Length: 194
Image (cartoon, rainbow, N blue to C red; front, side, top):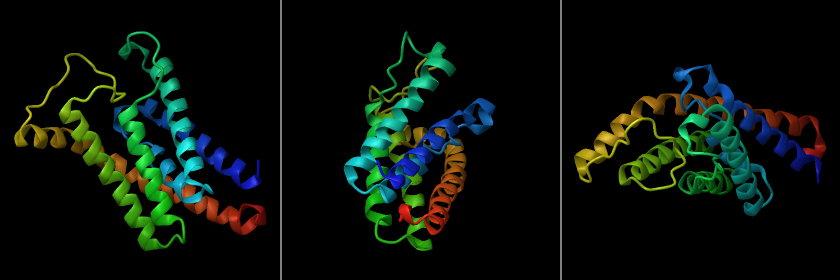
């Protein structure tokens, strides 16, 4: 395994560990590095298959820990941590990183890809909640909230998700700045990472 690949994997493991920020309290909901990590993997791994594989593995490991050690009360038995819909969205974000950031990282494509990742995830994941699709990978507390299958129900679902969007945007740019900026600085210092 090359130094570059090993360094990228270490950054992904840091992202997985950073998901535990949620333990700091409810104000930290959706303050997560995972979307930034998926975008970063797409931008820097040498192939799409590597970026997708490492993205899925990182999310799965984080889900295993959180679902079984931090939130076991919300799951009926052992959680395997595999949430197909959410993982598919993160694969899409990884592919976005492959296409938007692969050639050259500029301020414009950095901002555009990060905004597209957060807003796209918000729109698609809440749409899946509105449809009440199974296997979202989310824990259900109390009675399940089911939205009416009309325009008003969809807008209510998006409105319920808006409080989480702020933390998603802030954490996206913070973690992307750390991951992308840190790796670019490392590349200048260590030729083997280029």
